[in-house]
Image (cartoon, rainbow, N blue to C red; front, side, top):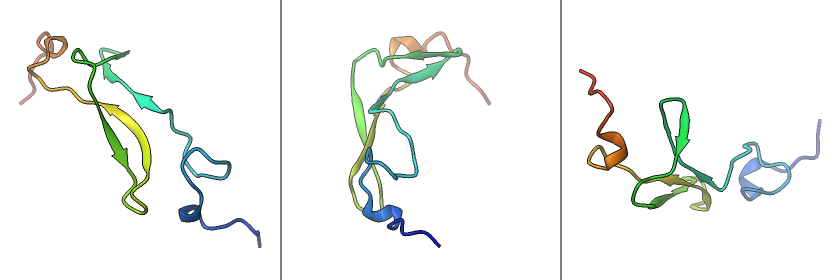
Length: 73
């Protein structure tokens, strides 16, 4: 038996939090991490506490970097 508190009581980024997350994630395109063309990110919140986990690139297929990608069916 351990004396570790439940992970819901540990804030993201603190020692003992079960996930190791970076503060920000870009798009993963063609095997490379690419920043969004418009520079916008959205906040990824944990549904448990509503706290910020990380920021994630906000992109759409209209963004110029996506135009060269083939569409899938």
